[in-house]
Each structure stands twice: as C-alpha cells, then as structure tokens.
Image (cartoon, rainbow, N blue to C red):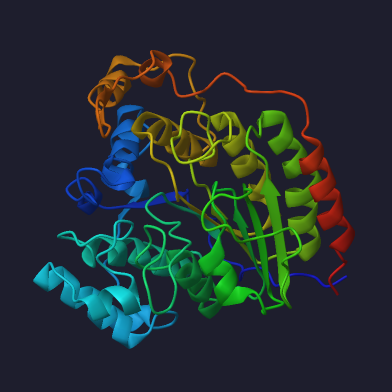
Length: 385
C-alpha cells in the first residue's frame, strides 16, 4: 500500500491555532435571515472566557484578495459580488446570473468583505499547515458556493479554496469530511473527478439542496450518506466507526479538512436530526491522528446557543482541554447575553444552554437506513495503492 508523503522534518508541531476576526461580530445577513445570529464572535468570547484562547494561539484572519479567489470562482462573479457590496443593490440580470440579492443570499453591507475574510482564513490555513499541525477556523465551511454564483447562504466556497491551498503547500492526498446537515454540493462539484481528494458527506435526506444521493459517486472518491430525520448519537457513532474512520484511514491522506456544521443537533431549526454535540466532538477527536495536517471548519448552525457551545467544545477537543460539567460565571455571562429573535417572538434559552457546554447524549436505536447505507458505501471502499 502506498505510504503518504509526510511533512518535512523540522521544529516541533506548534499548538493548534484559531483563525478568527471581529468582522463576524459586526455583520449580519439581515434581521430575519437564519444567519442573523452571532456565531463566531460567541465562540471567540466563550473560549477566552474559559481561558482556552491565549493570544499566542489566535490568528487574525486576512481578507482574501480578489485574485486569490479565482482559483475556484470566476472573475466576473467576484467583480459582481464586490459591486453589489458597494452599491447595496443588484440588477435583475445579476440576481439571475449570480444568485445575489435573493432571500437566501441577500445584499448586506459586508457581503463581500465577510466571506472574503473566511476565505482568507482557509487560504492562510493551507500555508500555515505546510509543516503540519492543527488549524481551527469556525467561520469557514461555506460548502455550497459555486464558481459563478452564490448558493445556500454561501457567497464563496472556502473549503474548496482551503483544499487548493493545502495542495499548493505540499499536501498530495486530501480527505474532506462533511458532517453538516446539508450536502456539500459545491465541494463535490469542485472535486468529484479528482482521485486525490476523498469526499465524504453525511447529510439529511431530502434536505436542501436535495443532492448527494447514496448512488452519486462521480469519477473520483465520493461517498455520500443521506441519513433520515431523527438521526441520533448511536447512528453517528456507527457512521464514524464503520464509514468515516476506515475510509479516511485507507485513503492515507496528507491532510484532513473537517466541515463541522452545527445544524445537525436537535435544537437547530434548519434540520430534523437529533444529535448531541458529543457526536461532533467524538468525530473531531477521532480524525485528528489520521493525518499530519488537520483543518477544522465551521459550517451551518442557526441556534446561537447550540452553535457557540458546540464550536467552543471543538476548540477544547483540539487542545485536549477538559470540558467542565458546569461553566464558570465568565462563560455563563457570554451565553446569557445572547438573544435570538424569531419571526414572531424572542426564543428563550433552555437552562443548560447557558450553564453547560456538553449536551446530554442523545442515543437510540440504530436506524436501518443508516446501517444499510454505510454497508453500501463500505462495499465500494478499495485499498488505494
């Protein structure tokens, strides 16, 4: 079996690094958009309140320059996105051609600068991981973006740009694992014919964009697992142990990119899955030793408390920090200060959304559809040589 090309020998691998920016604190997709809620800023504040994010581990995200985005996106689209931010209005032609100014992808003041910042983080991550290590960019994971148009709340596709950057910086074989509730259609579009990129997407069946069928596998190494509503922690543990880990290990990647969308937990309004955040954290930990380069991205997640708690726990796992049963007062204040206004009322948090990070496990019977789907995909797995 082929041996992976490991990173060059050198100084000890640095501590994990967290890439973030204040732009996420001060921008929103609009008052009634699902992405109106604070997410990355909550994670930064919560991790600092826990004493988990010293300045030495924090990297301020650069904003990607337009030319750097054309590795995947067309120059015409990037120009249209910049023009829309400047004018704060789009023509009918631009709306039709590029998907800008729609309910899903609205015009808002930072509509270019904000996604260009998360794209800049992913591009930088590939450079920082040239000699190995762990990078966390919770603002990343915008996996629906297409070359010439915005798609599914995603103006740019930073996971694609991250994979390209990793490859420019020495990674030959890259495994992309996506546990968001929605199919990673934009990433699959980019790499479905590339045998050196492994793509695994676990997503809710018949959930937008309603792609990623079990039978869709392209020419390259594509594994789609649509899962039924009600998927629980027992189901995800089975998927982790019988699909994700053996498939990634057999591929022997130089780098792993994990899209860790938080919209598959029970409290999220954009899916019908019922995971606890323990399921995500277990996958984060289990994938870590399988490659010398590890990039963990955010993604979906529309309940501000569950997103902040889950993604802060990801950072704890990456640093081997103990997650306490009860949060200290400084951390509780961060969560207590959040608010979530729905279309008709303000949604009030459950008590444990403010006092803890860890959900109670949400176990249950293994869904037959998940067991059968994993078996189908496992039968396709081959030994790469």
